[in-house]
Amino acid sequence: MTWIKRVPAHHGGVRLEAQVTPCPRDNRVHPYCDRPYRSPPAAMKAEETPGVVAAAILDDGQQDVDALLAQVARSQQQAGRRLRGLLMTHPEGREGCAAPMVLVDLHSRDEYLVSQPLGSGSTACRADVQGFASASQVLRDALQARPDLVISNRFGGLEAEGGGFAAELLELMALGVPVLTVVASRHLQAWQKFTGTGVVLPADATAVTVWLAEHLD
Image (tube, rainbow, N blue to C red; front, side, top):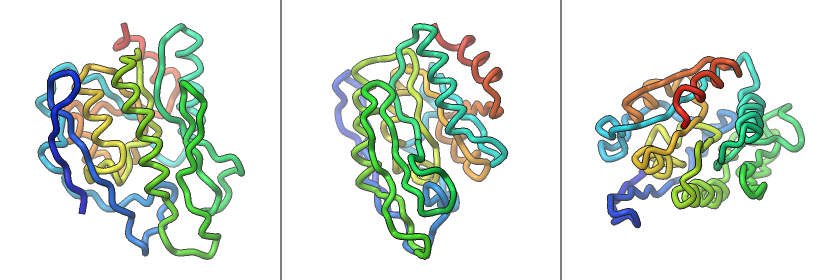
């Protein structure tokens, strides 16, 4: 079970903290052990949060959305915008379900291994919950930095249930920090409930750039 608690935030509002539990051991959906959608707790929804600027690129399985996010990040940095966040990389390629997954901090270039080396024959969830927990510090640091844009590698099954990076993303949106992420079609309903706005973009660099130009100062 994932639980949410409210604690005072440094900016005088309310900060939400989520405790993440491991994925079911019989689930090996690549790459985030996504689970069927269950409505997140009411406290995790941003429906009544004014000024939310957030969009998700739809991952329809036809394109490499990790590469697209990296491309968008580079172009925005070259344009002089201040970025924070995380990109997913696959140092040994993406062939097979056993390849390691590493999140990279856009600002410091620090790396976070977020997969367990269970082997190709394993049927257990290989997401490393501790790795994701460590990487979440990058998004918490972004709360202090107030960048022009925060990129999060996925809004996946963990976030759909109120875990993963959900608490950090919600607070960033509540502060008015623009957020760009990726969502699979099976989590569209959760994304729409979570953000209230439910902005979904096609996996196209031009479409994403246009949206960013319209919403970033």
